[in-house]
Length: 200
Figure 1: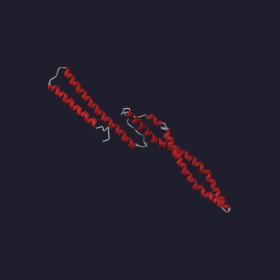
Figure 2: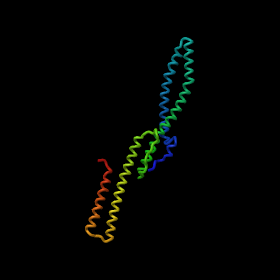
Figure 3: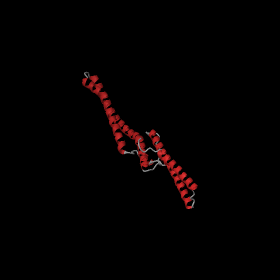
Figure 4: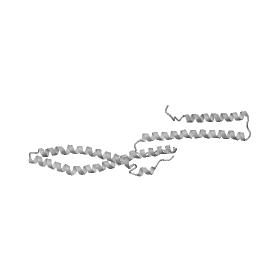
């Protein structure tokens, strides 16, 4: 049983659109949180600067404001870069499995049930992987059962034709052959009826 497109997972961007949108969303939300953090840090200092009456207090507030201003924004920039890179790595663990699920479902649409999904350590949607693998295994087993029953039917018909070609036309021989064909057809029908095609 084949695994689908293992080389695709080596790329950092499996689906540029989805991973890009996730990274932008994460960075945008981080910017909002960091802006609120900056407000809580800088606004009280700005108020102290405006309300400062004495020279030493004003000087102390100004020094604190400048020191924070000097170190805060480079740290924020570095943090945003780290968050962006981390979001891409995390999205890889999400988009990678989705890519494999899509490839497996496309294979099933093209009547190829040989796919088995194997996710990497740390990937998301492991439970969904198990369910899809169980589904494909169930379909493979069901279709293999149908193929086996169809083979038995074909063999029974070929056996009847061989007997007729040899001139064996007695009632007992024909009855035994048709009984075998009937039993095989019933078993095949039961196997087909296991598949529910319409909602009841």
